[in-house]
Length: 180
Image (cartoon, rainbow, N blue to C red; front, side):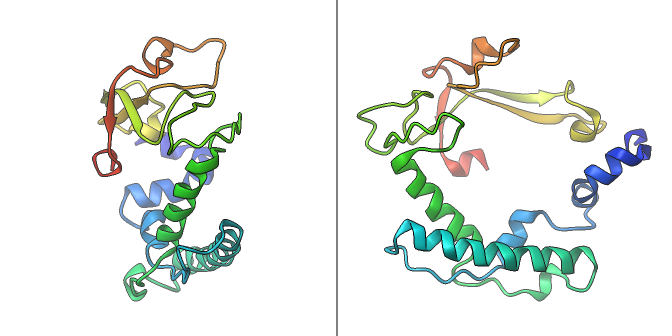
């Protein structure tokens, strides 16, 4: 594909290219192999400290894989992984939402009060489809999958998708499994 002839694109998206051509593993697969020992009852601050240590290990493993000193298959799948820890932290963050730039702090699990995005704990998808309009490094020759979530709160001045992305009640609730 011609876009990969551009050295700037190759340099900035080199991991993406290697993953898309099955030369390197996706980073979430590496996260699943980084051990993270934690107690789900630990305080959130403690979980963030553990996350920092695991993230450093992730960077070491990432470099070793990139340098071809290590293969993903050589790493065991631990009982608890960095990916599990990230999931626990996201669950905690729902209790004092700080996912977007507004950092409203609302408890999205209780759903008694809403923040700027007007969302609760569930994700809502307005629409999804096969898309040929993305930039070529993202879509390749065959297109990409596009997912428009509802209740976007970015307030972009020239949004071309506001009619489908801003309404909090638009679309359907999707589970993490459906989304994956």
